[in-house]
Image: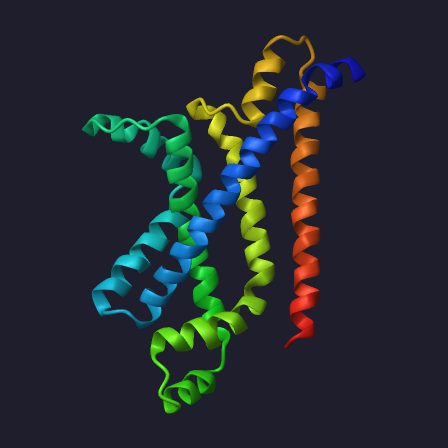
Length: 215
């Protein structure tokens, strides 16, 4: 076990670093798009509401691995070829946006309607009201769901080795092919994911406590 640890820990850590950076970029983009789409679903024209609703239902209804394969393999049928990294980022953002929309929509709806009415009475535009009044208050309500969302996106990266992206699971798979007993190597990869998820959870708990103090 120790020999396997010394041989492969460097590759595993290199893979988890790539997963973490990819997850961070995808989460940031998903949150930005999630806020825009949630606002459109709540306050946009009817056609925009319908399009966003169908998008959310499509993302939440299709299996994650099927979405990934459609982006990486399906688009080749129309002459569009994505690299593993490009396909991974596009999928994580598309998948994440579908869930972020619902997180932000629920958070925005949780803010009392009176807050928006008071802002309107003061002459504030809808955009200013959302940016300075609604979103900051909704953020504290959404924190637990947002942290779970980040962990979900991190776990989604375990599928990316299926399209040739050299992340943690790919490194573990490559090492496992050279071992008679790959179990310890997969346990090591699982341990690294678990530690990172626990760190994200601890950060989230701290943020929730600080946000609660300002309510």
